[in-house]
Every structure is written in C-alpha cells, then in structure tokens.
Amino acid sequence: MTEILWEDRYAVGHESIDAQHRRLFVQLAEAAKLFTGRLAKGDARGAATIDHLLRELRDHFRFENEIMRTRGYPQADSHRQYHAQMLTAYETATERLLAGADGSAHFADFLKQWYYHHTSGADINLGKWLSLNP
Image (cartoon, rainbow, N blue to C red):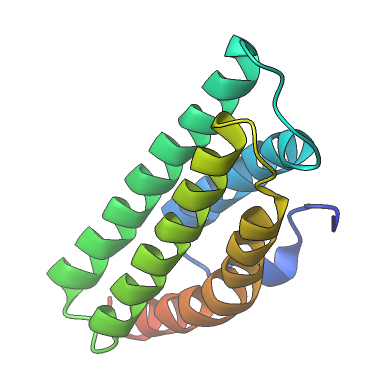
C-alpha cells in the first residue's frame, strides 16, 4: 500500500481545511497499517482507530459541506457526491475488516478517491474559489 504522507501540494489555502487534512493524513496512515492485513478478533484498539477515523471523516465532510453551503459554492453538489462516495468506500472497507475479512481493496479505493478526486482535485478547486470569493 502507498505510504500516506501530507505534502504541501495538497494545501487548499483554507486554514481550517488544511489543518483538518493534515490531521486526517496522520490518521489515514495509522489506519492503513490495519488494512494491510486482517484485524485480530477482539482488537479493541484497532477497531477504535478505524471508528475514530470514520467519525473524523464525517466531521470533516460536514465542515466542508457547510462551508460550501454558506458560501454558495457552485460545484457543491458534485463535491458532496465525492464525500458520499468516499464515506461509502471507507465504510465498506471498515465493515469487511471488522468482520474478519480483507478490507484492503476497499481501503485502496477510498485512498484513490481521497488523493485524486478530493485533496488533489475537488478541494484544490474549492480552495481557489474560496480565496477568490471571500
């Protein structure tokens, strides 16, 4: 699995979004270690890590959705759809892992969406729009 590291090229220029992304990258790296294999039955710490990341992702997406709503972002609908797709991919990976199955393919799908559609694409566009429309 690809190493998960924050890079400045992911910065969108919005202080709160960038801070949340940096924190999420750290949590994603921790979760990725769990998704490389199967979660041991009764691994409460692993399950808590995975669940915590899900809560953080939901909070982050709600935060971005609220910014887009209040600021009238014209691409908000498609951006919200990316959020929903990513949550579905992460939730599917989590369900599989917690059931003792291999969730790595679904987690890899989530990461692909996170890197290519979200932080490197949709969020960069959102950041540019927010800086031009304060």
